[in-house]
Image 1 (cartoon, rainbow, N blue to C red):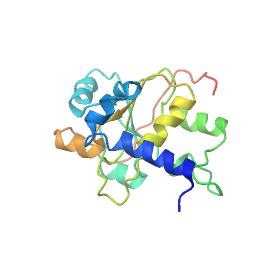
Image 2 (image 1 turned 60 degrees about the horizontal axis):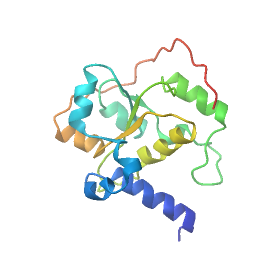
Image 3 (image 1 turned 45 degrees about the vertical axis):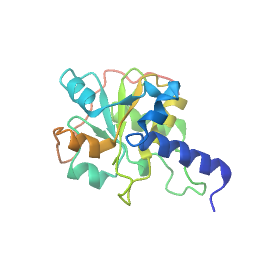
Image 4 (image 1 turned 30 degrees about the vertical axis):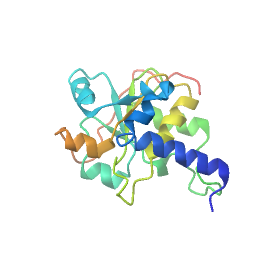
Length: 176
C-alpha cells in the first residue's frame, strides 16, 4: 500500500504524463495548461533550436532512439545509489553538476518527455518528476511533451539513435 503523500505525487504525475487522453481536464487547471507542448509545436521549434529537449527514459531507450538534439537524464542518475527513501535526490551540488554537464541550466527553455505510453511497463511518468525537480530549483521555462515519445513518433517526428553528444556551456554559474 502506498503512503498517502506518495499516492498524491503519483496521481499528479500521471495526470501530467497522460494528458494526451485527458486534455480537457488539463484545460481546467490554468497553471499547467501553458506547460504542455504538442509534438507539432516542438517540431517547429527544433528548426530554430529554441528548446533543450530532455529525454527522461532510461539510457538504453535513449540510445535506441530519441528526438534529435535531446539530452538524456535518466531517473537513476539523479537518485543516490544507496537511497533508502524512494524518490530521494542527490545533494544539490551533485544535481547541479549533472544538469550543467547536460546543458540544463535555468536560463534554458526545457521540454521534457518520456514514453507517453501507459501500456509500456517502463513508463511511470518520469518527465513529471523532473518537471517538479526543475520547478523546485527555480527553472522558469519548462514544458512537457504531450503524449511523450509515442506522440512524437505518431506525428512523424525525426529520430536519432546513439549516445548523446557533449553539450558545451560557456558558463554554469547559478545557485540552486
